[in-house]
Length: 276
Image 1 (cartoon, one colour):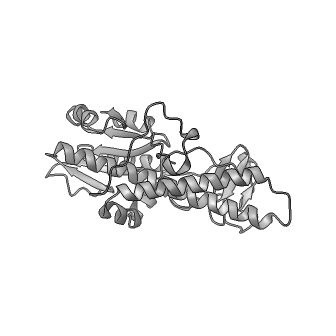
Image 2: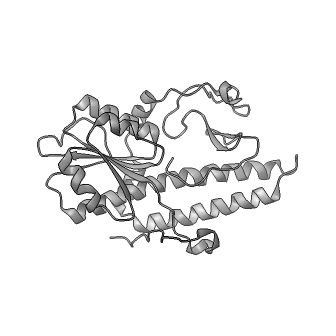
Image 3: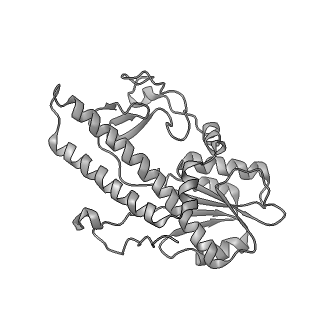
């Protein structure tokens, strides 16, 4: 087993903590869609530093989904079509979310796409550990995307330094974000076991397909953006899968970045750390 990943202590001021000692701020949620039995047991089984929200109704579960969901645990007691729809909605709302199916011996062969399955009866400690690893995998994936996105932005600004004025303070801040993200990635890797690290690399295309089915990208014109990237002509009106999304991502107020080439429109100011 790998080393323990320390939780963020209550009241910890990460801004005053040296970069090499900061702990990853993991504040995302676990959402559960299941019957009363699972819903009554899961919150007490999961680590106290993880927020768990439980739902016995699929519509209520769907309505509560946000980009801050790291893990969705869904019971195979739901009809396959309805369950698949909730999985689709989960990964559409939070593309880095990991999916765990709560199954029985009779339902463990469900065709619903998932990252893992839990077949009852489940050992309490083993269940808690597997859920936490799913949780950390979601944060690792989100942090990795952020690290590469910020790195591309920094490189673009450095290349432009000879052609236009570059805000040195902003560039320094972005480098700090990049270095902090890299530090967090090391902590995540030290915690995750070999199976979890391998799963990060081989996540099924089926989940990506579900995201594509569920996403209807907004017209970029409503955000003052062109239909394609001005640098690489990448289409910004189509959903391109979990990695590239709508073709662009928001970095800050009126600041956008192409997910294909990293071209940044306006000043680059990445959003705060979160799961999506």
